[in-house]
Length: 256
Ligand code: NAP
Image (cartoon, rainbow, N blue to C red; front, side, top):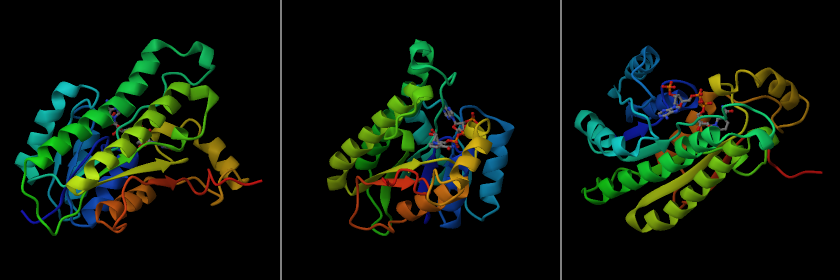
């Protein structure tokens, strides 16, 4: 097979779907993951296929580490050897609110889905890649979608911030380990992006963005994160690894 092959977790909708579409436009064969086998996931696969590339649905819970190996094998049986892993699946907190009210359930859920899964799926992807021969014309990378909250504290979603900070450090540590193996690792940190995850707060953030919260005075869209990831995954940042890309309209640019 002549395509690069990407597995995008959390690609049934939102940012992950935007990433899957952007990769497909670059000619990638794409495996789209969601938590479960849903109509939405199947529709998203069909939309990627309409762009003229092979695509497959690989539903599994990324927090269930016992499923990682078989998921990667299923991708490779359908599409060929993986070149690219995009760890995008994520969850927000169970309830936005006072840190003094955070439950162990919400803490564990954020840490397991947002951080632990990224570490172990990257480990599995890397182990597999190291046993295979490579195609020199391909660019090999792991791209982790974390968050501006890896850096910026939010009082009403502490466990989310902690999980994203952990995932961000996982990206750096893997960049250190995998550079000598010819695998680049990036940490993409979105700011305020209009998706299901932010639906309940997006109007408020759109107003605050227009009023100066972000330098670009609007919230972002999933296809914009897709374009960033597609540029990274096709090696458009050569001789670069371990870097954080703030995809946040300038939200975190220090100013006074
Ligand atoms: P979303 O619209 O809520 O979509 C979440 C995606 O993740 C869905 O495809 C969902 O699958 C999948 N998912 C959730 N838990 C999963 C699990 N345990 N196993 C496999 N898949 C799972 O979220 P989004 O806004 O696109 O966010 C995508 C990523 O960007 C997340 O990591 C999020 O933290 C990060 N992010 C988002 C924003 C923002 O403003 N939206 C900002 C910063 C960072 P199902 O459809 O099967 O549920």
